[in-house]
View 1 (cartoon, rainbow, N blue to C red):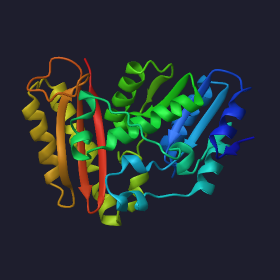
View 2 (view 1 turned 60 degrees about the horizontal axis):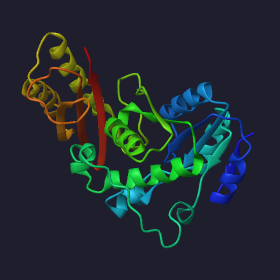
View 3 (view 1 turned 120 degrees about the vertical axis):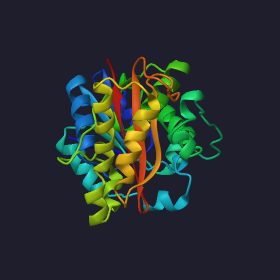
Length: 279
């Protein structure tokens, strides 16, 4: 039976006697099949699964975005129960950021480009809340989606640098039949925007095909993605990137693993997607 807990004390008490290892799936709620895939992987790997539901105010640069983020805890808990989650921790903000909270976890170079440049302070908020969750749960494994590729890299760097024992595990992107990556933000798309949104995946695949045919110029692959995106009037590209797969430094020439990534606005909704290039 799934327990729903609110406080740090309840969480610690519940975890004191559970079978190890523990698998942690941190979420901000509004769960979809992408989250289900993370929970299923955690369930397969661990005798105990903990899912957290917390819309983290510290990773939103604008209060409007935080307020707009979709929420439905009853639905989310039902999904967790359906997937066999043992513990759902759904705390109020003052159980995550205790009164007088005055600590910031700031990861270095890997957090600066791409999403870090587009959303200043975002990864400080992510790293801080994940460090708290890792500390509270003490899980052996934590599961994150490849859709947020840079976020996973930031969290992995944070855990390594701070000697946190939780292993960060990346799981594949889950997509709609037309290729759109599942995201809680998709709910905000209008019908016309939803019809246009698969262009993110189409742009990435166009660049992948060129790379597969032998193209190694970063500028050429960026131009391919940008051309695909700008051909769709509702798509407003924020960035297109061909970056080193380890450092996220933009590449002139691809000689090793690389990450193709895009961020695109459709009206007020911002979507991201990526594809790894590996030999």
